[in-house]
Picture 1 (cartoon, rainbow, N blue to C red):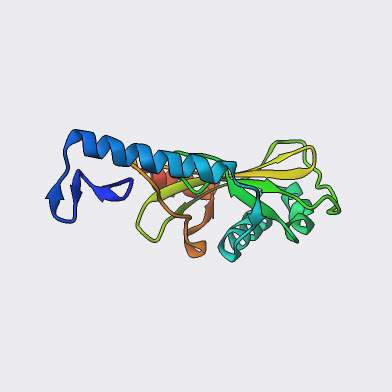
Picture 2: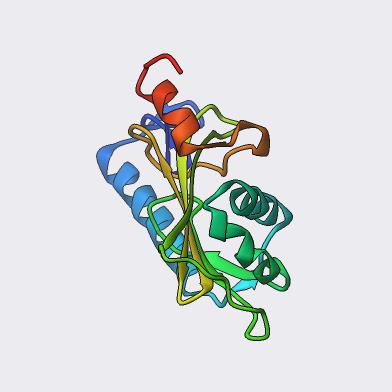
Length: 165
């Protein structure tokens, strides 16, 4: 498995020593922390596509948050290497309505074959965070799931647990 830009202690065909591995891991962790400190940027097309899918397939109230995707801004919300993002809604966007903080819960697969879960959160009627987490252990960064692989948690949980659906 990849770990912060190198594979199992090998870089360019050379085996890395413990100190070098730890230094590279520290540098990668610092880079991710720096990304968290940056100001929000416009949400990417990939992020917006995933968010649209989650709003269309999430809780019944999730669709009320769709207008907030216009002019949405985002930034890294975690330094573990996951693609989770904090969401910053335009102040002019209308508020959504939901009795729950979680408005969508789904699973998917990255293009690299990593099974992931996604949870879309709202706070006070505003989209607040898209959490993307791996099922199982992954070291380092991994990407967002492909749009085609997404399914709502209830539909996919039986498959993840190895039960027939």
